[in-house]
Structures are given as C-alpha cells and as structure tokens.
Length: 356
Image (cartoon, rainbow, N blue to C red; front, side, top):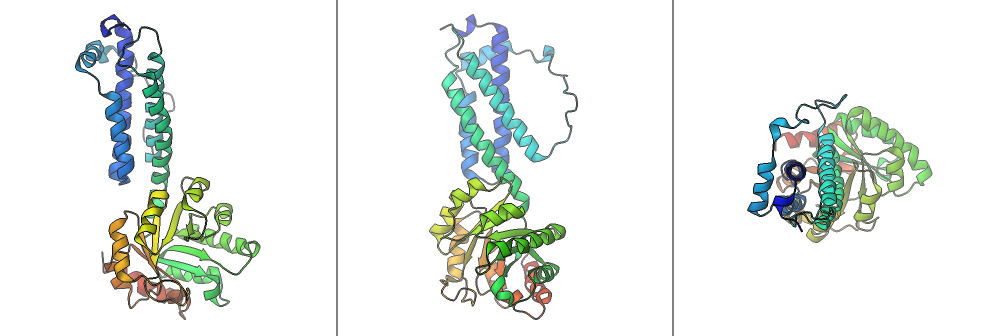
C-alpha cells in the first residue's frame, strides 16, 4: 500500500472533509441522545462510534491537516435552492444522520481504491454505516414521541366501559378533560371490536380537539385504525418488542408492571412509560396484586421513563403517591364513579400543582 505521502493532496482533502463531516454529525446526534433524550445507551454507542471512526495516528492526521484548504473550497458559499434556513429538530436529526452515512460511504469506497492508505478500513466504515441506520431510527422514534410524553404527567383517566355503567364514553371523557386530565385511555373488556371501533374514533377526535393524549388499551389494530397517540399493554398482552416494531415511530407505548424487573425489562424493550400498580386495592381489578408505595418508590429509582401510578388512587391518597415518585396518576372509579366527573378530575389534577 502507498504511504500518505504518495496519496494526492486532492484525495487527502476528500478524506479530511468526510472525516470532519462524520465527527461533526455524530457529535450532534450524540448531544441529542444525551441532553434531549437522556438515553445513556445511545449516547455511549454514538460516542464510541465517533472516537473509533475519526481517531488516527498523528502522522496521518498531520497529512490531512496539511492538505486542508478551507478558504478556497468552492462549496463554502454554495447554497441549495429552496433549502430551509430554519428546520424542526427531527429534520435536523435526519439531515445529520444522512450526512454521516454519505460520508461513511465515500470513505468506504475510497478505502477500496488500490494503493489507498492503510488508515482507511473499508469494512469498518461499512459496519458503522449500517449501525447508524438503526441508531437514526431509534433517535427519531424517541424524538418524535418526546412531545407526546409530556402529557404523561398529571391526571391520566381510563375510560373503562364497565365502570361507565351506561354513561357516554365521550361525555365522561370530555368532562374529565375539562377537569384537567392530560391523557385519556380507552379500555374495554366486554364489547366486540366492531362496536368498540366507533367509540375509539370518537374519543380520538375529542382528544385531538382538546390537545390531550389518546391511548388505546390492548388493541393494536384499533390503535392503528384510529391513529391513536399510543397503545397500552399489560404483561400478558402483545410483547413490547413486537408492538414497537408494528407501531408508527411517533406513537407512545405504555406497559403495566408490578415488579422492578418487569419495569426494567419493559424499558429496555422499547416502552415509553410504565404504569405501576395496583398501589391500593381497587374494584376494577379485584384479583390484582397490590404493590404499595414502597414498590412504587423502587420502580421509580430503577427506571428513567415517565411513571404512572394506578390502582385505588383517589383525591385522598394522590398526594402521597406523587410524593413516592409518580409523574402521573391513572384513575377509573375516582372519576367515572363520581356524580360530576369534571369536579372529581379537577380535585385530583389540582393536587399536582401543590407538588410543583
């Protein structure tokens, strides 16, 4: 193989420019993972990739620096017609990921040229490029769901058909939202999907109009058909990893957990929030395990995701649940069973303001 001295200055400039693009692009993606998404695993993966790709021995780096001629680069003032000056963060993320991928492909192809320098490893660049395709998807998924996850705080009302006792799904949900609910979940264990679908469609429209999150319990097909904001699954439902693959990138995925291990597993498999409970005995799940406040604290310490407490929560005990680490409290009977769902919702929603 030829030494760096035998490589033309123009070729070294191409290598230098593309290594710089790789480093710059990966650094931005790393900052998004670290500072915006608080994702330790992706941050470390991007940091490791950046160091492995752009580091080199000093003689080689010196050759690259000597070949650099930024002042005469014809691309410095080049603009693409129609290119936006201001971009949304997801667009910036994708643009930088693609920028790195293109540079990696350029370096990969240069490394295949006979007589190329030994510092260029074609296979290394190829593997990094394919790894980045997956990382880009994971980062974009998390970023697109970030705004939705802001609603997983405060009051989370579950519209359970059996607990409504004949009252209108939409009317009760509307009152709950007026009372301060930030998330509405539809749960139905009795009706056929054929009858449930129009109810879900109506609730989806209501939540969109009122700027609250609409989550479908259990049924992935209904969540997809109604364009719900997300899906909630129990331990015996569709596995989190399978649901994550089937849901669109911007959809929230919640998972119920009664143990620390279940919560940690759901987090690693792609859940966006954890619902822990039952915190207290509850009529909606007479045979459900009561985990208590101590288990809630343990789960809070073990996960980084938003934590929803569920099970037997009322206006009288919501404060201690929030103090134990819950970002949100999910209720059924406390709101659906009240004479005025709006008033009952407001009494619980107001408790969160005292903990800010």
